[in-house]
Structure formats: C-alpha cells, structure tokens
Image: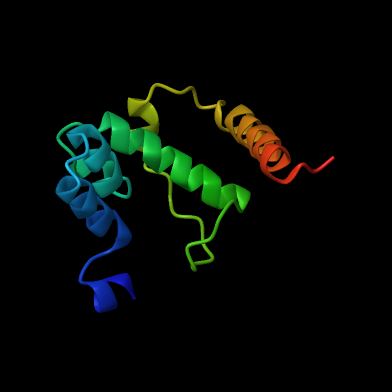
Length: 109
C-alpha cells in the first residue's frame, strides 16, 4: 500500500526525507537500505538496522500493519559479526530494555 499511495515504501521515503533534511549520509543509508542491506555500498549500518527490525518484529514489538516476520538476511547477520547463538541473548536484552523504557515513561511498578 505504501508504494501504491506514496510512490515508494517506507525505507525509500524515509531515506529521501533524511536526504532533504540534510542528515548524515550514514543515517540515510541505514534507513533506505534496511530491508536490502546488501544493496548498499556501505552495508554495516543497514545491516544493523535490518537485524534490529527483524528482531523487533519477531518479538512483537511495534506494528507496521503486517503480521509476518521478514526473513533475516544472513549476509547482514554475518556482516555485523554476531555469532550464530547470539539471537536469544539479544532478544532477551531487547525485552528487558523495552520493559525498563516503559517503566520510565509510564511509571509502571
């Protein structure tokens, strides 16, 4: 629907906005290529955002309107240098930090 109504998906449009706002190229690159980090000339930042995006979707954090977890780009995983058994600790840490953030903002006890 993004492409149909906006002429591009959120990654492309976000990258264009960051370019117009004259934010750093590395940030624009991370946003523009986070679904296809291999298409970027400098793929480290897009790879990091890609892994974070897939992890967030797998944990049910946030919603973009779709109900599936996108496939993890194994080349992106390898590029950021994480071991194969790092995903579980990363997911657990993300959940802890999300709980802490909610606690700070909403004073939940």
